[in-house]
Image 1: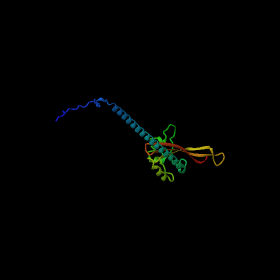
Image 2 (image 1 turned 180 degrees about the vertical axis):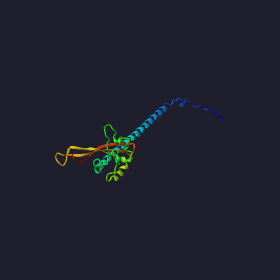
Image 3 (image 1 turned 120 degrees about the vertical axis):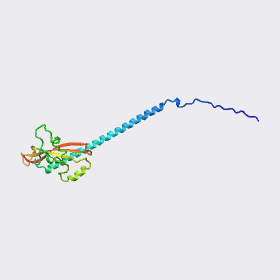
Image 4 (image 1 turned 120 degrees about the horizontal axis):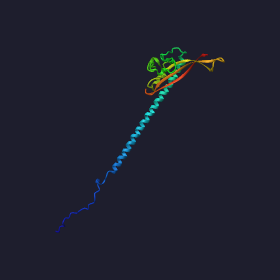
Length: 206
């Protein structure tokens, strides 16, 4: 029996292309793109947070402004209902009824640190304290605010206004002049606003 001698077959070899022939260009580009996307994402988040803070501050200031307007209206109703000429007004701002400082160049009462009208409860009035039905309105207003509006009333003088006719021809109407200053906060006590108005109350004829 003839036998065929075994011969080992040699497979053809080809050049192997492996990682040693790559230089990491794709990885570098991918890392750069990932870095750019990260920067864009962080920038968008920061911008969104900033816009949210700005919108919240604007809303809080609007709350404070509306509260200040409510404080002025409440004080004007207080004047019309409870004030009689200069009765009860003094330089110490007792119960929030003030006489303006004499002379020019003096510090106004609402900024005078020696009076401290805003932090001393006996020297200012609060929204709803002296007006009918104020308790319900004050409770509703206070639900949205850090604190209720405060105000002081200054009695200036009695003035005649010839442009406003009285009951008789040739007469002029006499007015008491009151200056109202109110301070109010928004939902945060950091958002504060101060408003002022002058209210005239008729006091007979000149």
